[in-house]
Image 1: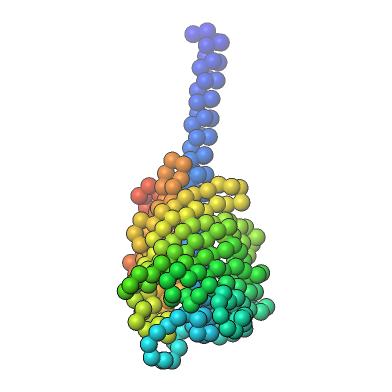
Image 2: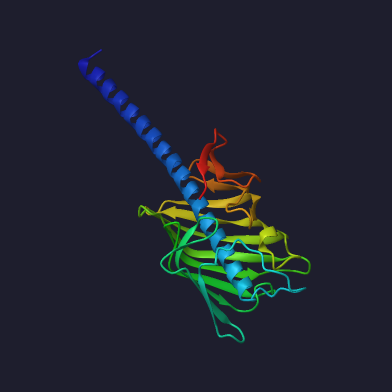
Amino acid sequence: MKPTNVLTLLFLSGTLLFMSCKKTNTANDEIETSYQLTADASVADYLVEDVSDVKDEALLDKDLMGTNGPITPIETNGITSCATITVTPLQGFPKTIVIDFGTGCVSPNGVLRSGKVQIVLSDSLRRPASTAVTTFDNYFVNHFKVEGRITWTNTSTPGVKSWRREVVNGKVTAPDGRYWLHNGVRNVVQTAGANTPRNLLDDEFSITGNGSVSNAAGITRTHNILTALVKKVACANIDRGTIRFEGPNHYAILDYGDGTCDRIATISIDGGAPRTILLR
């Protein structure tokens, strides 16, 4: 074989090996990005559910839930007990409710919150077609900054309490400065506790829907809830349900578990071995 042919073969082999390694590295990077964005989405889920709990406690405290039945003691997690809640105007709707956690206060379950949550309420929260639009003013939960707009629309029908929850321009900034964006629509159905409206601790919700999460580089993963998420007010985290995230050449499954009230969830790629994460 001529020397030039040998050199050509070596060059081609090296090129193919380089391209193969590059392709492998790119695929691995995409998968690691999916792991990270899926974990980031779980943090966003936690923060949105936490805002929901803050909203419900504040509205119940100010008798704006639209509850019916006998007056019984209020039972909550006490997460707004260290906040200042103002309502304007006192009569009529719409009302603006500001929940001010000041420079920082710790709730009984150990969560540190600071800043303000503002809710514009069109009518009592449990009245069909009412809306609650939530925004934030320098608001932090355990040093994670929460931004964006969350709109709850009451979609209840006779015998079923439900809401459509939409997150627009959601943004979470971690304590280290890293941030991600999230948007989505959730359909939330109350599955327990509807008959005891002044006791939030027995409330339980089933959640379906879809959305997206993006990192600072503009890389996005869309997602769809495969099996309904379960959120109990008495539990800090979602404790059951699965979400599928779409990667360019793969998919990730976020699995919140079997209903045990804990911080454990898993992420798997294309049905492979799951990676355990700790929820917030």
